[in-house]
Length: 535
Image 1 (spheres, rainbow, N blue to C red):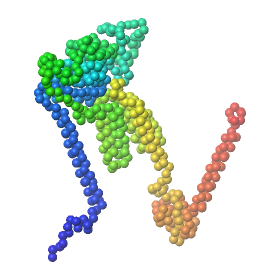
Image 2: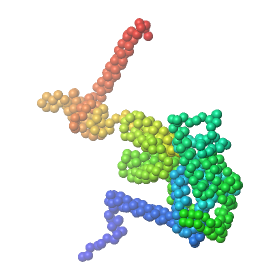
Image 3: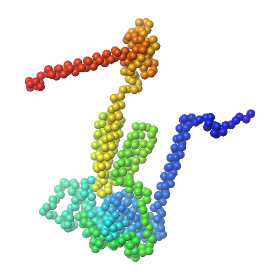
């Protein structure tokens, strides 16, 4: 006779899944969802990565890229990659539409090196109206093959910024000429002391910056005298003044007007002379892609410091609660991204070390009973390190005091909470082991405590303690139902005394302590005061 084979529905009805098997199935479903989310993220990133290649236009196009804000790793990466792609696509001209208050020296020099080596003519266009090319922007304008400005813009103020010491004072007083021999002396001027390290560093930076921009001006045939004054005296020019003093080549209203005015010009590039044909060339505007946006976000010192803090705290929570996984993964990612961002920024490594030391002390406070000593030291180290972290005063790259205060306050709250929890845990009675039974109350059961045969010195029997049956012994017999207190434990046998006796012993102990305190107070009063006078 053929056995009946139950259907799948019947199987599920008659054989419910084992709890462990159900847990495994749920884990597999979650893993499948994670795989789908990762696939979707990779697909989105690949689509975003293709945005930069979408502007591959016909040969001879004019590529326009807008750079707004401080010059940093993100803007340098964007300009370098766009110029490389423009060279691959044989673009006729690349226009950098610039509006910046300045930026980092390393990023500026990376951009200038790419411009000088570019086979495609590069025009730096200070636009739109109201824009500026200050500090690092002035160097980029001077390095470009073509320098242009829109009406209502300005450039200049290219004095180097002292790293970690505030703005660098000019060696020459504004308004007074500075020749090759150095600043002219005046009765009110104070000469730098021979051992003045800060003044020596300032002069070195200023002379280096002046020589750099002077070399760029001589390379492009522009006004080198004014360029050096922009470095030494921090002077600025409007668009019309810059054109009159031969600092820029022309003034245009927008990128299309600039392309028309540059038509038929011959430009000397690293690949030779190039005659521009841009009057009717198509303009292709390139926007920053996901990589540039990502670099712009993480290269912000504020974000980098927050990522470091979150990373350390995430790893701490994972180590304190193994198995959660999410805090450890998120903390590891944030810590690595934060360290990568620090590698892009002008970081003072002493400040970075203090920040990491402070975070380490805050984490150690949760594991070591230091009563807040490590935590307080960690707060001080973190605050001082955050103040020293970014080694520049370039606009847009400083860490504001409110952020430092907020993170420090968060660390203080963390230390207070951890110390409070640890203190409460130390004050709580022991709940496991042999010590947990001492001081517990119980009740004698069965036939009470009686002396055994053979002249035993202790009465033994059974008692209920914490809802469990325990073998107990006592110096005196006790009847069933008597309340007892546990005084010791040896293996599976408890030593008990009647609760009344325990209370009497506690009262006697308190009385002895009071008598001891009174005797000590009387001795202090009877002790003669030094000098013979009574207190």
